[in-house]
Image 1: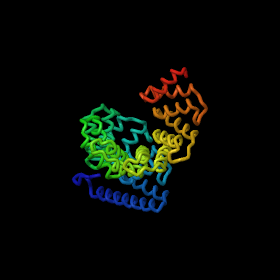
Image 2: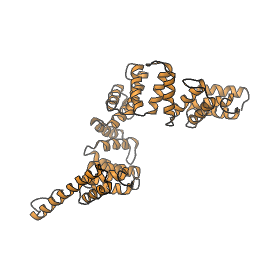
Image 3: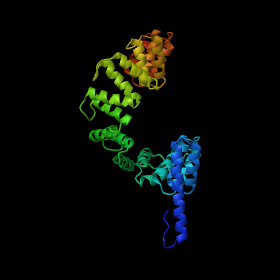
Image 4: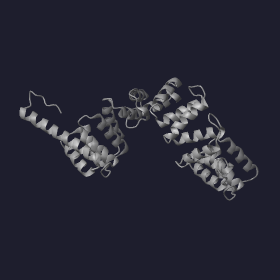
Length: 358
């Protein structure tokens, strides 16, 4: 708040300075109490500071109510405090308010209002707002789709070192989405995000090195990136690293480690993880054979639409492995996989028709 001295009286200036000083004291006291886990008193002091117009206090209250830190989670109160700070021009509050409207957290879901607040924050250089605004333009959410504006805002965010934007933009260059395909730029952006330990970027670099996309093929380097992504709890990386251990590519062959990684991904409901864990149980790879467990896992992955799992489940039903033999179910699952172009399922389905197993 700026008071023009030519129109403000000395009394008004003194009153403002006293008010500002009091709000800062309340803010500092509130945060001190919060750190001491005296949450009720902390919120009282922060609320008094926020009511005096202290932007930082308003931001803290918005955050605490959104995540339920020291207070009961309340999206409505969170949005109210963010709005007060946003109306004072704070870019972080503007972003969070936009995020609230994007997801309908405490306010009616409205993509166009979200874009309005993202834009205000993005113009002040707020990196998260630039990233989300770029995605809004990319997917035409709350605004007319524009690849030009999408890439503009994603670049602004990526150039400020925001890992999410670097990863997203890197993928765009990798597959030529909204920009001309450029693997060199893709790798550069993915490396920048990976250097910040951004899990998905670590995984994607592993993929690039495993298959030689934009870099020289190197299974050892791929395994290293996958291992770092596994530490960030990326299930796709668990499956990929598990495959490398299964076939001894870039790492020493280790079926037990492969099974452990597949099982970890499966526990996160990853379809490929479920399929490979089932495969291990079926073929006794790194674990004692259990056709019943294999069939259960194949079914979980099959219901997520994974064609090789649908085919494997079809084989279970055709041969009565881990389930009661049922030709009708076998054909049903072969059909689902075959419709997705899975060659083995198409062959299996052809054999079923040839033998009259419909």
